[in-house]
Length: 156
Image 1 (spheres, rainbow, N blue to C red):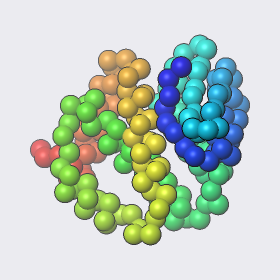
Image 2 (cartoon, rainbow, N blue to C red):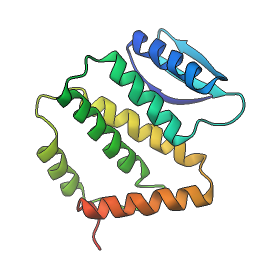
Image 3 (cartoon, rainbow, N blue to C red):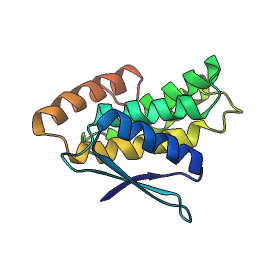
Image 4 (spheres, one colour):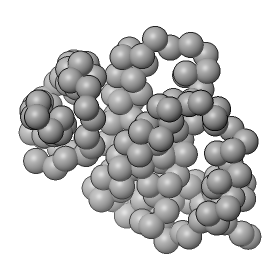
């Protein structure tokens, strides 16, 4: 089994486990209440990047009373987390000042959930990239590079 992330809220784990089982059928769920480690094992194949993001996004949407700003924050953390988690595997090096400007301009100063969601999504992206085929990784990294360029994280 491979650990993809940690969280301290047991109810969140129950929701994610239930959604995973319902959506993917053969996923086994194990959780350590002491550490809050979530572990996933798919008996047929590794979870795909899109499937994992959908399961995690759905779980977060259900676990949190979602106001429009909460949803936007979660969406932004998901997208940025995917981009940041792809940096090394895609052979990129981001401008740290550009990331800071992006956060300052788009994330509310009092948003305390953004960092943990961002970290979870970045770890998920790193995990997913490990299992990608060469073609899938090429496609993924091509779009990551384009998006990073458009946000000023990398130069031309």
